[in-house]
Image (cartoon, rainbow, N blue to C red; front, side, top):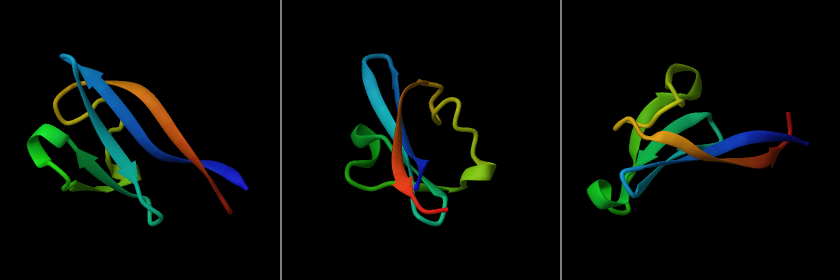
Length: 69
């Protein structure tokens, strides 16, 4: 089993946002203040710039999960 990226937490302006990566490597963005419990689909992980979130916040924490490759 190998670690795979499961999500990234971003922080800026005293506010957190997050991206989640599902089992099909699709990326979902959430800003709880704007989207509530809903997430916005952004595309395949290879096509999404994960360095900053949609609003320019910097990466703060990486979350990994165990996965069979």
